[in-house]
Structures are given as C-alpha cells and as structure tokens.
Image (tube, rainbow, N blue to C red; front, side, top):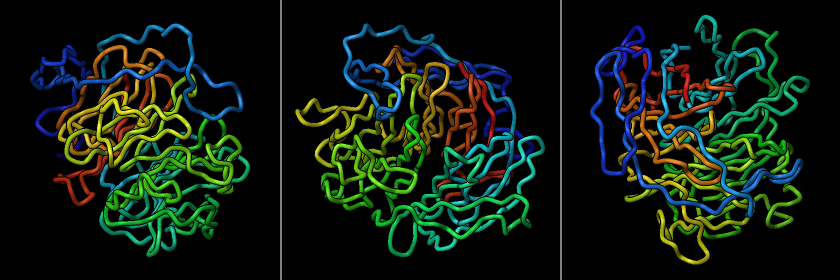
Length: 402
C-alpha cells in the first residue's frame, strides 16, 4: 500500500455509510463507491445535562427533554494523507499552528509532523520509556497554557510503573534536542505487558484526565486503592481535584478493563472507550464515582451498582482505542475491527445505531483527533506488532465527516 492507496481499493472521494439496521449488513464498495456501514447494538443511558462552568466535565442526571440527534446516516471522506512511514504512532497533540506532535510507542520519541508538507522530524526522546508488549510512550496532551508554558504532557511506561510527565518544548533548539528533562507529575500507575491504558487529555475544566488499564490483573479494577483499571482526574500538577469522588484521591471512575479513549461532547459530558475480554467492547458515559463493572460485568448486564455501557460491540468488530466527538457524533478508532465507528448522539443517548466506515481499508486504527467542525485526524496502527504493515504504514489521514 503506497502512494496513498488503501487496502483493496483506491481512496474514495467520499465514503458514505449504508443503513444501520441491526441485522442488515452492506458489502464494501469499489473505488469511488460507498463503504460498508455495519451496525451494533447500543444501550441507552440516562439523560444528562450540560455541566455548569467550572464543574467536573461529565454528565449529570437531568429532567430536560432529550434533544434530536444528527442524521441517522453519516458520511466519511478521506480528504488527504498528512504523513506516512511512521513507526508505532500512538498519542497525537495538535500544535497551535496546526502541526502535530506524534508519540512513537516503541521508540520512545516524539516527532513533529508539518501538516503542510508531511515532513516528520524527531524533536526528542522521552527518557525512561521502557517499551514492551502494549507499553511504551503512549498518550500526549498539550498544557492548557501551552502558548505561555510550552509544556507537553506524556503518559509512558517505565521499568517500574506507568507515569505522566511534562516536558518543555523549545522548537528553537536543534532537532532531537527540543525536549527538556521530564518533570514527573504523577507516578505509580500499575504496568504490565498488556492493558496499560495510556490516553490522557485535558478536559473543559482544564483538569488532566487519564485512562488506565488493569494490566491483566483483573482484581485491580475493583480495588478503589489501586490506580489500575480507572479513569483518573488531577490538576496539571498531578494533585487530586476538588469535586473528585474522594477528596484525597485522583480516582474518578473505576471498574474498567483498559481505557484508551477519552472525549467530551458539546455539553461537557465525558465519554470513554473500553476493551472487553472475549465478548463485549464498550463506549461508556462517565460519571464521577461510577463503577463500570469489570471484571464482574462485561457489557450490558443491568446489575445494580454497575454502570452499563451506552454502546457495545462484539470484540472482533472493534477493540476500541481512540475517541473523538464531532458533528454531533462520537467517532471510535477500532484496532482489531479495522474500522471507524460513528455513534450519533441525542444528548446522552444514541439517536441511531452505530455505523462503520473505512472497514479494512487502512488496517488497525489507533487514534482519532478532532480538528474542529467536520474535520478529524485518523492514525493507523499497523506497525504495533499486531498488524500487517504495507509500504507507507503507518499513516495519519485527514477526514471530513458528518
């Protein structure tokens, strides 16, 4: 696969989803035609209203009427290829000028990608990264005050733990030497050969959120004293936030298996993707203090005390990693499923069944990033040791969506 072509077909000018009936499937189209739009069962969640300014960025129960959602059928157009030939790309941060910072999980380096030319330059290496299995240099996020402090936050695996550090970025220095020494803001997240979580993001409240995994030790997810199998919420300095479920803890929600996607909708509700084990992958609406069930529950169970997912898929259809919100829908990058899922929302509930786009065309999909309006970035993950890389992998694509 070279020169911008896709697996089994040329780049379509527009990739449009087909019907979203639960039992109806569509065949992949040829070049220039429509891509398959498969569907998966979804569960409804309680309606949630917008958070007030300064409140935790999550959904809270509301008696307000459920708003109408976007069109049931969406569309995805591959607008271009920003970069190719990347090795194990994972986290992505968008700089103020539109260029990208991209983490290489296995090399432990951060590169700058010029979006106008595709030129990729290593700006530095993160010291202490210990790659192996699913661990390494994972999520990236820019400080909310990046314009003044130039701080880049990174979630990464070391020899002893997973941790979050911030590094000063000075683009006036020589390439390869533009990152300052890491200032660790949070440490002690359990590590393993699998299920390291790794996604970090600053929320609308300017607090830092992190998705962690239970490292294959399933008991950690229900252990409120463990940092494994959780979503964490902290200040930019790594301290617990006023308004967290427990005043002296960064634990925001628990009972997770492996969280690699975090996103907020226009009403400041927090959503997360979660890898299932053998049966159900999940998209969850995150509420502070919520118990999302693992390992007692996988998928929708309706058991008291546990939060059911809003959407679930069979694991061979998804393995959901990155998550973004745009044009009234959640967009989910699927690894094993090799597709981009669209979940149209009416408030806190799906307004139609999920649709799949780009199925099998670019292989495993790791990260999806909103660029504002109807534009997304999509990052492939064929060089992570579980894909089948072809010439040009891995890639960053620009999409227009509705």
